[in-house]
Amino acid sequence: MRRFGPSHNYYYGLRRLVTMGLTARELMTTDVETVAPDDEIGEVLTKLSRRDFTGFPVVEGSELVGIVTEHDLVDIFQPSDRTLYVPFGFPPFLESLTYALDLSWDELDVELDLAKNAGKPIREVMTTDVRTVTPEATLDDVLGVLADEEEDVNRIPVVEDGHLVGIVTRQDVLRAVHRERTGDAA
Image 1 (tube, rainbow, N blue to C red):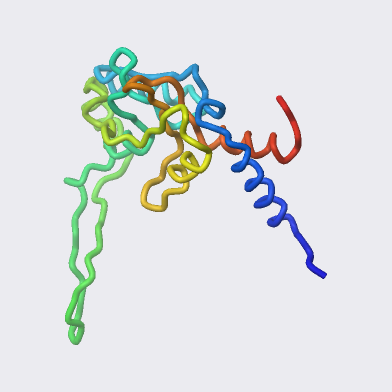
Image 2: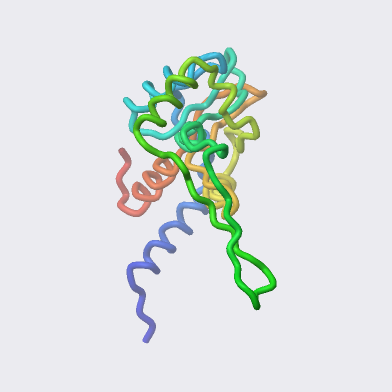
């Protein structure tokens, strides 16, 4: 007798969802909050702190030119010039290990970094090599980007003829899976 547990039900539901033929157009949010490349870092940090998400597409007009995430902004506050790399090894080891020590990471440094960078344009920290999909992309295409082991992608801009028309987040995909599994149409 074969038994099916909760994981079987999850994968069965996901398989049914994938075979439904959902596209990015059906999954995406069309009311996308964006920032411009010349918006100041301090302004974007403030905007981000007041939202429930972790990044913004960067657009000029309606053309996607990049994306900025919390990760991009955190890098401002951990500059490599404050990191001391110390090789460590004793004979008979032929190779040494290298340890990185952060020499200063206190509140004053964070405040100084913010003051130094707040007025810079977001274009200086945004990611320009953005993973995108078209509105006709299948759920498999979307899952392929979100599940990429090399990159940690949480949101995928949906682009048509170079223009941003929507965004698909991991949450959008999870909601679709939930609706399929529960039969909830809302």
